[in-house]
Length: 235
Image (cartoon, rainbow, N blue to C red):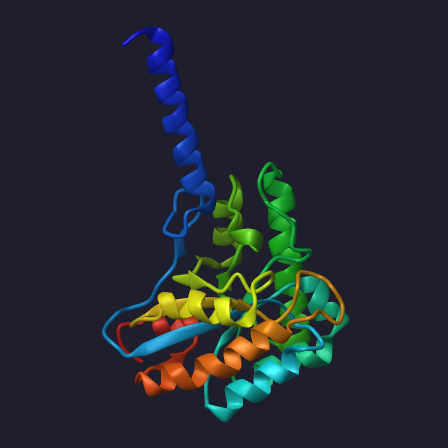
């Protein structure tokens, strides 16, 4: 094999490793992260990103009808825009996670920028809801250099997902199929109660899918846990 071929292979390997580090759901190369919980219980963690939004109360009503607790990864901008709804989530017994302040892609951003995004959201959630998140989900699932220190300094563990609904662009039936495909003991399922920072987002397809998902999972014998619970051997 010639020098050019070797260089090409090394370059492809390096690119593949970088792609995994940045977007791989099981990667902890750039910051500590989990994508599933313990498999010893018939339990699933439902998670919702991008809120709070005007649609969030509809999610809370659906979850309450199944006595289901979930983890909501909230954006600081949305918390400041809709503080009453942000508090409703916490007061209903759900867990709040950090989803950055302005929902940016983190790749190619400085360590200082990444820290500000996490710290500002952390402070807004604390001032509004009285709780400091322990978990962080990167916008778009994209991690970058500097995130490890930011998470460590703020006491955050990264959380990816076992399955994601892709509900921002898929119809209701496909969303349901996407999450059911990954439903198993300890699964962390990702849906969205907002659409980044958009006011009054159209999340009808997600709500419709959740309306069908909850009874299917309950019929399969699953109960619903927060991320903090799904990661623990016993609760």
